[in-house]
Length: 299
Ligand SMILES: Nc1ncnc2c1ncn2[C@@H]1O[C@H](COP(=O)(O)OP(=O)(O)OP(=O)(O)O)[C@@H](O)[C@H]1O
Image 1 (cartoon, rainbow, N blue to C red):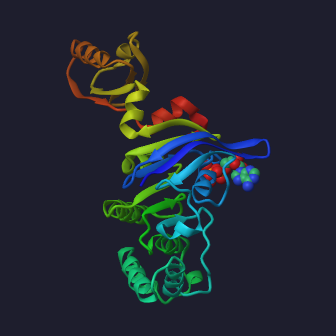
Image 2: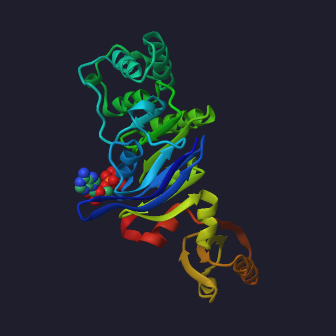
Image 3: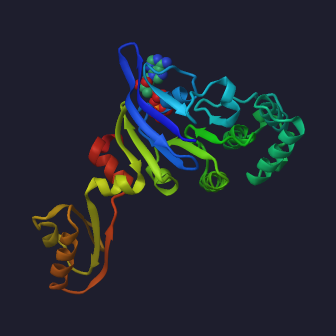
């Protein structure tokens, strides 16, 4: 069961919100969609779910388009949250579970398990409007998971959550993935995607900037960082021809290089000047890649 997006373009009039997007999400994987505001993430999700038609290209889950008929296997956290403010939490979750084909009692058990998992069991009989924004967000998230979907699409699931709740949510989605679900989520936070996803796509103005496995994307970037800490000024190393860029810091400096042998050269040369307290070759971060490909102003 893979999610297959092939040469998908979405136009609103003359404006292309998504341009020729191709990607494959393997069953059981966690896929991250990165991009600044307006990149085309929500539009892509709406097309995956069949809420919007594609202008060109095709999207299939398990070989078929997602329609109302198979939507009970799908969980969706929409960008614009929409719970019934006057309805009580448990009642609402049970109702939404039933809409997706669950028996009332199963929906009740699952809802309460999730409320406990997110440490809000005491909200079961409160009205949604009585909850804080972050806690409403948890309830909405539970609403997208309660029926045990096999494909879960989460639009900005971390927005509006405090750091403790972000960690709780990360743990929950990793657990669900371990249980076999396929998860696709969007974020404009590179670190969340870097931490959770083995596969990712960075979008910008509807274009796919990079996509593939985290490892491929990092290796394909062809640059590495070398961090050196020393008690002497490292500027002379930054001036070496093989170094692409150098950022000095109080403790030493960070060098961006294109070839691994430059790292060894840097170390050898640094050692001729004095003792080195720290030396490491670091992979580029997604932030480095994004800035290089898209520009600082969008990061
Ligand atoms: N129904 C629509 N009609 C016209 N333009 C639209 C429509 N929906 C989206 N767009 C445009 O398509 C582009 C992509 O929007 P989209 O909501 O997919 O971005 P996003 O990556 O989800 O951004 P954000 O992080 O702000 O949610 C934007 O320029 C948006 O204005």
